[in-house]
Length: 131
Image (cartoon, rainbow, N blue to C red; front, side, top):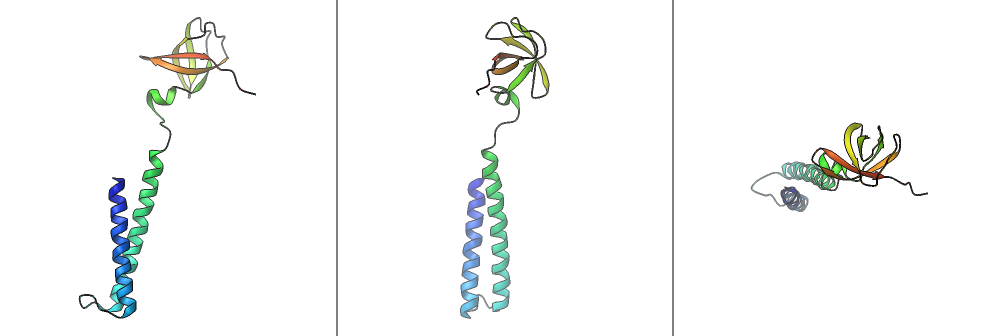
C-alpha cells in the first residue's frame, strides 16, 4: 500500500514537471494551450501533495504502539484492587482483571506491572518506581 502511494506521488510529480517545463518553454503538448498545461500541472502537484500526505500518515501509523489485546497489556502498570496471594484482582488501563502474582503477596493498592498473560488471567509483579 505504501509503495502505491509513493508510486502515484512520483508519477504525479513527473507529469507536473513535464507539463510545467513544456508550458514555460512555449511548447504545446498534444495541442493544449499553455494555460491548460499549467492548470494540469497545478492539479498534478496538488494530487502529489495529497498522496504524499497520505503516505506520511500511513507510515506514521505503522510506528504507533499497539493499543489493544495482549500486546497492549503486557508492560502496563496497574493497581491491585484486592490482596494478591497469589490470586486476586487488579485494575489495568481502566479495566478489572483477575491476576496471579509472580512475586508472592501483593497488598491492595500497590502498583503492579503486567509481565504476562495466561488465557484471561494476567501475570503481575510488584512495580518499583525508579527514583
